[in-house]
Every structure is written in structure tokens, then in C-alpha cells.
Amino acid sequence: MKKTALIVGTLIITLGSVAQIPIGNEGKKDCSLIVEEIDRHFIVYKPTVNSSDLLPVVFMFHGTSGNGERFYNISGWKEKADKEGFIAVFPSALRYRIVEEGIIKNTTKWNDGRLSTIICEGELVKDDALFFREMVLYLKTNYKIDERRIYASGFSNGANFVSRLTLEASDILAATAMSAGFLQDSTFMAVELIPSFLTVGNMEPTLMSDGKPIVNDMKALESQPLAKIVYRMVDKLQLEREYEIESRPYLTLYKFEKSKGAGSNIFYFGLVDSLAHKYPNGINHPTINADLFWDYFVRFRK
Image (cartoon, rainbow, N blue to C red):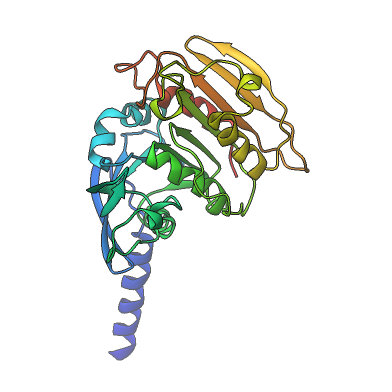
């Protein structure tokens, strides 16, 4: 009798372990995890797909004051996931009391490396890089994902954070793409060297001089903030400061493809015409970042 019970118990445990990765889970799912004793929230969207293949994953990190729900609705990545057949993830940052430009604000912020310098006394900064890793573990357990094709995009403060992940989470990510945000802390070190893509609008308010659009000439920007930002990532990815230029509608690409070492990493910088501080989605600007960045992502895997 005891032997029979043991066999049945073993069978239940075995079946339970097989069932950890469900075949379904299609559609939008509001998820939460306890990370550093804090409840963290994110949305996972899995399109309906006929294939049983492992699916790529794209994380979309919102900007200051935003949340995952907002970028689920406006970024274009949900629609791109439906079209291309990948899982899209929309995390939400924690809310902090911060001081920016002398003004106290209560807002959502990603820990991009600068956060500890602007939070109010008594606030405790959490490790968003750890949150990212925990989300990846959640996806591995609950979805059939292709671990060689995990990507991340971000806007503004979310782009700052993805710049950090480009270095510190490069053991997980196959490639990254950011819009209107930059690497804030140059002390972050790359675990591996991976491809990355940064776009900025030529009407980005924080980078314009005297209210004039950013000049479309990298050499003319050598002493300006934008060039310093671009070269900061170029240097971190161990690339030569040499580039080729490709012109597209509304977009000029500066392609840094010459590695200092044996790596095949590359970095693209794109200056977008007639774009201010927005994540372009085809409605607020003719450019659609989800299309542009996905075409870049599919070229790379771990």
C-alpha cells in the first residue's frame, strides 16, 4: 500500500513539472513578482500562434511617469507581436519622490544609474536590473520562449535603463534598441558585447541649441552633448569611432560596425527628422519604432 502511494505521488510530481510550461497563455496577462520584498508588476502579451516553436521576447520599458499599461497601448509592440509572432513584455517602474530641476515630484522612474542622485531623503532605490532577470525567469517557467532571442527597447528614462541593461544584462539579451535616452553612468561594465541601436529626434528638447533642430552631421557635433552620448556607448561596446551613413525617409543612420576586438557587435545611431520627445508609433510620427527596431533585432541571437 505504501509502495503504491509512493508511485502515485511520484507520478503527480512528474506531471506537475511537465505542466510548468503551458502550451496556451495567449493574450494579455497582468503579472506580478515579489522582488526585494516589493510587489513588481508587468504585462505579458502572447499572440495566438499556430506554431509550437519557441518564441522570441521583446521587453518595452516606458519613460518617466509612464507604466506598462500605457506602453502596451501606444508603443506599437503589441501589434508587432501579433504580426511577427513573439512575446511582448511591458514592465512598470516603481514610484519615487524625486527632485528634478528644483521641483519635487512623485513619479515612476527606472533605476538607470542616476536615480540615487535625485531621490528625496528616506526613499530606497530598488534594483531594476534584478527585476529584469526575475521577469526572464518567470517567462522561462510559464512560456515557451527562445532564450537566444530576448531583446529590450526603452523610451526616455526607460531608454536610459535599457542602455544600462545593454551592458549589465548582456549575458541574457541578444540586442537592444533605445529611443530618446542614453547611458547615464559610464562606470557600468559590459558582461558581453551585444548589438545596440539608439534613435533621437532632431527636435529633442534637451539636446537642441537655442531652440534649433539638431544638425544632421556627426562631425559638426564633436563638441556637443549628442556626440558625447553616442560615443559613450560606442566606446563601451568596444567599437571604433568610425561610421558609415545610410539615409532613409525621416531617418539618418550612423552605423558603427568596426569592432576593436574579435566581437561582431555593432552600434547604430539614428537621427529622426521632425521628431521631438516621443516614441514614434506611426500616429505621432511617420516612423514606427516597433518596425524599425524589430528589423534590427531579428538579425541577432545569442
